[in-house]
Image 1: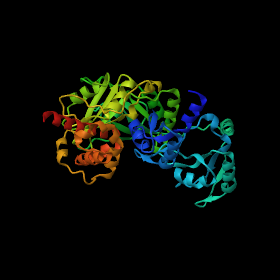
Image 2: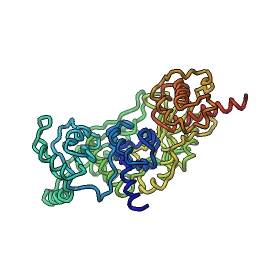
Image 3: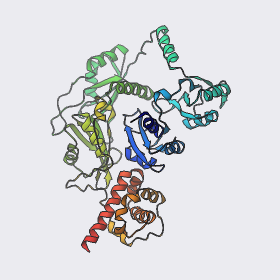
Image 4: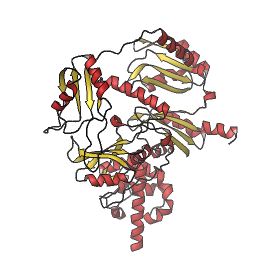
Amino acid sequence: MDQNEKNNEIFATIYVGDLSSKTLESDLFRIFSSIGEVVKIKLKKRIEPLSSFAFVTFANGDAADRAIKEYNNFRLNKKNIRVLPCMDEKSKREDANLIVKNLPSSFTNENLYDTFSVFGTIISAKIATYADGKPKNYGFVQFDKKKSAKMAIKHCDGGKLDNKIIQVEIFDKEKRRKQEEQALENKPVKLEPKFTNCFIKNFPESFTEKDLESLLNKYGNITSIYFPLKDGTFVSKGFAFANFESHESAQNAIQELHGKQIFPFEENSYTTKLEPFYIQKAQKKEEREEYLKRSFEQLSLEGQNIKRNLYITNIPAFIEKDDIFEIFSEFGSIVSFSIGIDAVNEQRKYAYVCYSTSDEAFIAIEKGNELFIDNNKLNVTYFKNKAERTKEKMMSSININSTVPFIYSSPLKITPNSSFNYEMFSNLSTTEVKNKKLFDLVLKTATNFKNEWDKLDVNTDEEFAKKISNILTKKPKNEVLEMEEYNDILTNNINYIIEEKKEKYKNN
């Protein structure tokens, strides 16, 4: 690729940031193909609370410009995404990058963009946030020209926003780094606040409050224990709190017990052993989230944020342990496995699966989320509290085609559309559109099925979209929503309709 071709590709490429980890390439293709021809999508998934991001390349730069204007701050998978120009590092102007301090707490990325866009073309505008998504009191605005940044400083520095006087200045990374280093050198050593309350988990179901008290008493006097039980049972919820009389006692217990394998192996077919015993300082929610964020960021730099432990929900109650174990064994070697009844909905079960490698777990995430069991779509996520991390490069080495849903073939009733009779479409009128959103989505795919139009007795894109969308609208509401959200599922259902029609032709 010569320099001109490289430059053209950069101008036709957009950066899509702040993506949910649930986002698929097919989601991005569905959204941005409505703007223009999408040539390439490169999605980089990261474990939450870190945001995933992607690069989307169009056939031309005009489509990229439209995508930025129409989809910046678009809501996808419950997150507002950022859509920005893709610029190489040389073209970014550090003298046009501003930091805006003392912003109102109600300010959003969109507010920040709108406030400063009057001064010139903005490449990016983002409010800094805490781990829980709450905004901090400052943000960054990157202009394309130094002149625009200078105008923004001239007119906004010292101005008022919601009765708060804001500061606007050039963001100097090197200066900020030196200030932070200097502050650390001059700052007195901050002693860790003393604590006495500890959070405890990873003990057997047979473990009782008295057992816990006996275990901890040898390290110091205990003033109170909180040991919650599952409703209507004497079985622990799996965690507890213990408050020691002194800080030293709490520290001793942590030093002697945390991370130790202090319980015997459980004898059953699936679970070989418990996770190591966990006892640490009980943290407030905000403290823990901030700690997790820092840990994840550090692990990401080290390439160690891939996990092996999965949490599976929305399993029908009648499904047995052996069935789920067999299904997920398809994706790799299972080290440990357990299953239980959902405490909120007794008609559903949940399961924990630990694979021998992170790439097996990654495959299970990708493929497991496309599984339907008796018309129930499984939900498979990383189980954060028991994560074991490995190098991030293992994720990028896995090449999975996420455009085709995986349907597990087994004696169980596991199909993508088991409750729907596709033959009803032969009598369905196409004179009116019954679901406009579904119609628009099908319309975008119509040309892909042009060779099959004669099987459906249609001659145009619109006729095809009307007939197919009206058929699919008859499906259960939850399945319609899935098709509207996931292009893979929609395409799979269209293929089923066409295959049914082909079979009908053969039989006639």
